[in-house]
Structure formats: structure tokens, C-alpha cells
Image (cartoon, rainbow, N blue to C red; front, side, top):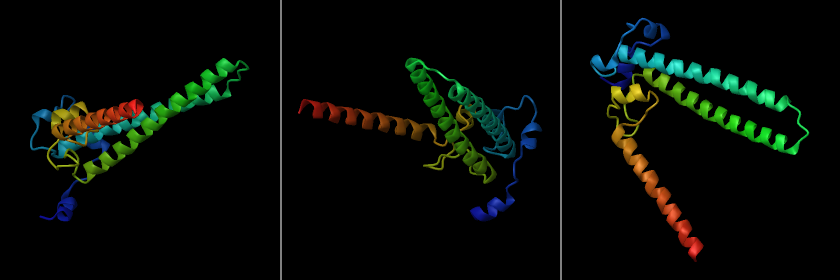
Length: 166
């Protein structure tokens, strides 16, 4: 069956599907992999993460507004306030990126593509997804990526050190 035909058969998941799961539902005890209940479970988890992130952005934006509306004549207080606002804006940017990633994952659930490694197509695994629902790489691919990142970082550091010596 073609992927397009398969997608026509896919049931769209809603938050109601998540709410209809038994309270003690454990996806580890349910087969086959990424069945309708799995998809409903992770849809709910990701939706809750998204909602929580939106609330956190709202709270941070209120803090930013309060800091901006505070008038300080002391230069040290003013510098501290600017630093605090910058830190809060960085948090908002991070949360915004998480929301974008969650939105893509929610769509992957609808497309029945969630739970599979972006690079290899292999199953990410229920345990990993329960620990990190926004995971898009299998453990082996993630580990290799992290090792490669360390190697690249160390190579750059070594090149920088060599530049200082010259």
C-alpha cells in the first residue's frame, strides 16, 4: 500500500482521544508500535507540553513588561534590568522553538510518522519517547550525533589553541 493510501486510512487524533485513555494507561504495555492509543497518548502529552510552554511565555512576557516599566535612575540597576530582560527574551525564544518543534510533532502524529527516527526511519522506542516526547532521533543516531559534536568542538578548540601559539 502506498504511503498516500495509508494516510487516507489514518484516524486523526484529538485531545479527546487522549482523555479517553484509561488513567493508568502505560504505552509500554501496548502493541503494536505507534498504534492509535500510542498516538493519542503522545498527542496528549505533547499538547500539554505546548500549552505549558505557551503559559510560560505569557508569564515571562509579563515579567519583561514589568521590568521595562520600572524606572531606575541608578546605572547599575538599569544594567541589571537590561540583563534580566535579555535573559527572559532568550527563554521566550527557546520556548518558541520548542513550540514549533511540538507543532511539527503533532502533525507527524496526524500523518502517522511520529515515533520514527528522522534519519534512519527506525523506531525511536516507547521508553525514549516517554522520557523525551520531542525526540526525533533514535538513541544510536542521537549518541553518534553527540559524539560528532564533541569531536567537532574539540577540533575547533584545538585549532584555536594552535592559532594562539602561532
